[in-house]
Length: 112
Image 1 (tube, rainbow, N blue to C red):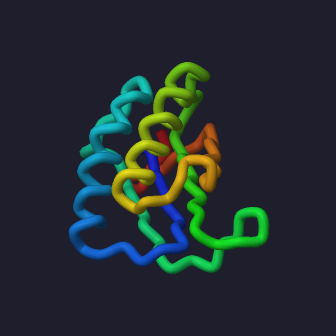
Image 2: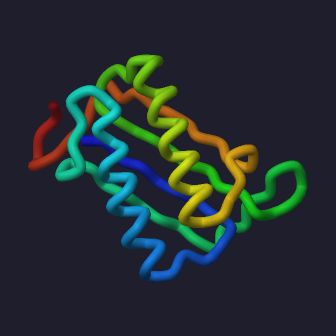
């Protein structure tokens, strides 16, 4: 039930897309009870984002049903930052990651 959206200022080619999908899918298991088969990923490239007035940056949104333990969010932040730095060549000091805990989450026509 998690959703991760990556907004990046750079283009993302098909090879990078597949790397991101696989690696983010592996990383989601750092959140208790989360599995890649339930993960929805949205990749937005060539975004008009500016960090400190300049480009070459990323904004990542992590949404999930229920509470996100602090230690798990820290581990996921480290892993996602590493992935984006390696795959997209965006420095980890040019990224923001935002977590949202949702009390309601719907799938298959019903809420959990």
